[in-house]
Amino acid sequence: MARMFLFISMCLVGAFPATAGERHFYAPIHDAAWTTSGDILKCTLSQELPNFGSVRFNAYAGGNFTLVYELAREKPVQPVQKAVLRSEPPHWKQNIASYDITTMSIQPGRDAIIIPRNAALRALYELEQGMAPTLHFEDWVDARDHLRVSMSSVRLKEAMTSFQQCSGQLHPKGFEDVNRRVFYFKPDNIELNAKYYADLNHIAGYLKVDPSVKRVVIKGYADERGTPQYNEELSQMRVDAVRNYLLDRDIPENKLVSIYFGEMNSKGRLRDSDRRVELELIR
Image 1 (spheres, rainbow, N blue to C red):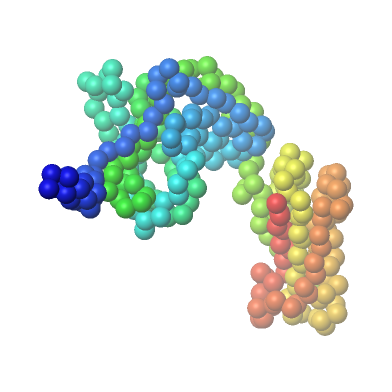
Image 2 (image 1 turned 30 degrees about the horizontal axis):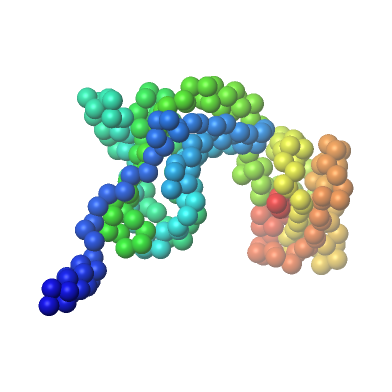
C-alpha cells in the first residue's frame, strides 16, 4: 500500500505544471567581457551571455545604430508579444532607480531581437554609466516564465574605446543611402542633369568599399512621346548616360547591368516620372 501511495503521489506531481518563475540570463563577473570587431561598413561591440546567446551594439556606415539580442538556441514560437528594455542598477548600486528605455514587439520565429537607433544609443549610454540594461519578456515556449536578459558593464572601457575608434572611421554612406536611386530626364533628352552628380559620386564611392554588391542594375524608361522604337532607343541612351558616368569613376563594367524598357511601363499623359532611369544595387 505504501508503495502504491508513493507511485500515485509521484504521478500527481508530474501531472501538474511547474510553478511559473523567472529566468535571468547574464554574464557572471568573472566571465563578463566585451569584444570589438569591424571594418569600414560596420562596427560591433558584443558580449556573450551564457545559455542565451549574445548582445551586440552595431554601428553602420551612414549612421544607423542598432542593439541586437542574438538567440543562440531557441526561436520565439509564441504570437507577437511585448518586451521592455529597462535600465537597471547592478546589485552593488541598488540605490539608483530603474526606468524603461523602450517597449517593443517580439516577432515569433526570429533569430534575433533588434532594437532601433535611439533606444540602442540610450542603452549604450546607460551601460557606460555603469547601469545594466535589461530586456524583459515572457518565455517563447508557453509564456509561463518571465525572462530577464542583462548586460554587464564589467570590462567595458577598453572595448568601448576600440568601438568608438572603429565607428569614427565608418564610411559616410550606408547601403540604404545609395540604393534604389531614380534620375529624371527632360522630354526628348538624354543629358544627365548635373544635380544627380553628387548621388552618383556617392554610389561610386560606396561600390568601391562594399564587395557584397555583385551587380548594379540600371533600368531606362521613356514616356509615350514618339514611336515605340524611338522611345526604346531614348531609354537606352539614358541608361548609357548613367552607366558611362559610373564607368568614368572606375566601376567595373562587368558589374553594371543595363535594361531598356522604352515606353513599356509608361503611365500615359506624358508624365515627367516616365522619363527616368532607376538604379538598384544587388547584393
